[in-house]
Structure formats: structure tokens, C-alpha cells
Figure: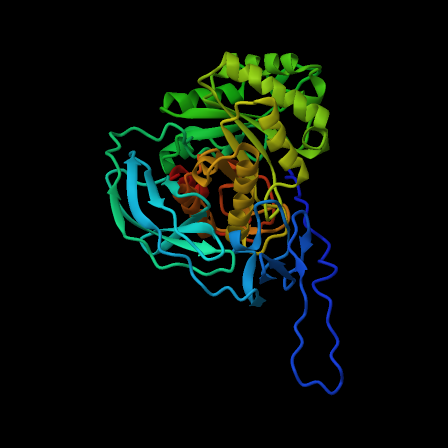
Length: 476
């Protein structure tokens, strides 16, 4: 029995060496002396409690992280809070004018407003749905995705400046989404937990579908059976075995499958195929044999994720796969830190842009990084992914969210992190609210109770109902 280990994300290990140089006052002086903080900079490790300045304003670090471009302190309130020092700007921007709806679909509301003014400069706009802050954007428009059909939503907008001053609320506007007509959002893939037929007492997918309403599974894993020849787990034939039987069952009940290539361990196609065309040919064999709606490339470990020659081979192959199969969605799945993709993930994203690879969804695996709050760290990692996509492609928040996915781990992770059904529900609801288009977890094989059972292949290690995480995922 092989238990699948996930990539342990890089955690910033160095605290900021210098948060400020203290100025020394004469012994007889009674006035207070302010520390001079260092200027915020990207690609820097900051420890909780570190102090920086940005645009003349002091900020205090709330949680340790490595900064990235776009993560300036005013932009990431989850990481920084405004300090007591600063340049003395206390003037709030003017109120944004003429907030209006510029269009609706069955799942989104598009907004626009007139720019606010400020004595120094407006840095962003906070968009509120009802009384809840949805996002902060730099421009004067936003599309709120993931909404319910035929539902009314009310919005207001506030302007903010670099010093953290916030304007009054704009006029409120109410918009009603269009009827859904029973049609799903075409960009959103159905919730599809991983199912592994070679490990962990695999359940009958038909039984799980009947019990939970789930309509899709991510079938794992296609590996090399020698050279550039694909096989299930590297040793089971593409057709005629347990994997095909499971897929036939899923499709017979009106479901669909995503096929996952790679993973953490095993002999993978990426290093074994000699060229992008050879890799694409191997993928095509699987598509022809199985007929998936989605192909998922789980790029992990040193042999694919950290080997840039292999990374590029896979990326260039995906261009060929998409050209030959325009109706099959392409997903890349990779590890993350608590604050977003590490350097290998950033490189993967930037290189996909440089090579013009038509990737439908970038999915991160937000676990195995020593988390004690899986919901908050999943959100933080996802926001880091969003920023990386925006930086690479120039997308808006809504455009980035619409190309994002989350693949979690139910119950206890390899590092004993705890994701309860309640936490997974929170993660699912956050993903829906932001308009993410993929949700998965590892794995249906483990979606059974065994409180105190530890990290094992056939149950979650916690108390739960049978198939509870799958039922939650089906609600995506």
C-alpha cells in the first residue's frame, strides 16, 4: 500500500534581521524617541511583529511571510496592520461617485464607478456586498462572480489612500442576477475529489455518488509504465481494468472524470518523454481511451516541479494537447506555501505566460506546511496565487479567481494538520464566493471515519460521517 505524500511547502525560516535602528537619546532627555523602520521591500522574509514603512506610513507584520510584488502592506491587511507612526496624512479620499451595475449574468454582477480624489493619491477601492468587504481593487470596475441566479445583491464602494484613510461609502446599487435556466457556469468544473483505484480500499464510485450527489471524480494517477508509455499507477492498463470500470460507472450515472497525471511519487511521464510532442502523444492516448472532461497535471517533487527542463517540456506539450482537444479543460496542480506559490510555482506561472500555454485552471495544494489554522492559511495561500496570476497575466481579481482551484486534504494531513468537515465547508464557501472554478481533495479513499487512526490510506483519522467531505465538495 502506497500512501501519497504531498509536497511540503517552503516556509520562510529567517526573521527580518533588522526592523529598525534605535536612536539613542541623551540621559537627561525626557522626550520619547521613535524607531526608524526599514522600507518595505519585495522578496523579503518578515517575522511577526516586524515594522516597516511604505509611502510614509508605518506597518506592523501580523504573520510571518516572504513578501512578493503586489503584497505592499496596504494591499494585504491579513499580513500587515497600520502602525502609529507615519507621514501625518489624515485626509480621507473623496467618496467614489456614480456606482452602477454595468451588466449581470446568472452568476455575476459587474460594477463601475467614478474615480475618487485624494490630497496624496487614491491607492484602491474597497468593494462591499451588503456589509461584507468583498475585495480591494486598484481600478474603477469589478465583477463579482460566484453569485446565485435570480438573486438581488446590494453594493457600495469606498476609496482608500496609502496612509490607510478610507472615504465614506458611495451610493448603494442593487442588481439582480439573471435566471440560471438550469445551466452551470461554463468555466466552473464540478467538485471532483481524487479517487485512487490502486490504493486505500477504493470505494465503488457509484455508491459514493448515490450517497452524496457528487458528479465528478479526479482519477489518479497516470504514470510511466516504461519510457513514454502511460498506464494507471504505472502498471495497470488504460482500459479493461478497475480504473475503466470505475469510470464507466461514473459516466453511466451522468458523471464526468478528470484524469490526473503525475503526483508526488512514482515513475512519471514528464522525465521519461523525450520531447513535448512525445509527452502530448502519451496524454492523447489517455484522452482517447478514457474520454475525460479535464486533464490534471499534478506537477510535484524535484523530478518535475523543480526540474525546469521537465517543467518546460510539460508546458509546451499542453499547448499541443489543447490544440488537439479544445473541449478538454487543462489544469496544473502544484504545492504552495502559506502565503502563495514558492519560487518554483511562480516560475511555472510566469513560464506558462511566456510560452502562451492555454491553461484553464491553476490549482494549489494548501497543506503540508505546518498549519494550525487550515481555513485562514488556505485563504492566504489562495490570495498569494491570485496575486501571482495577476502579476503574470495582468488580470483583474475576478479574472484571476476564475482561473484558480484548491485541492485540499481531508482530516489529518501528512503533517498532522487538521481539516474538519466544518473547515472544509468554510473553504468551499470561500471558493464559491470568490468565483474559483475547481475544488478537489485527497482523497475519497480516506473519506471515512477513524478517530485517532492517524494518517492512513483508507480513512481520515478523525470522527466524521461516511463520505462527508465528498458531500461538501459536491456542493461546490
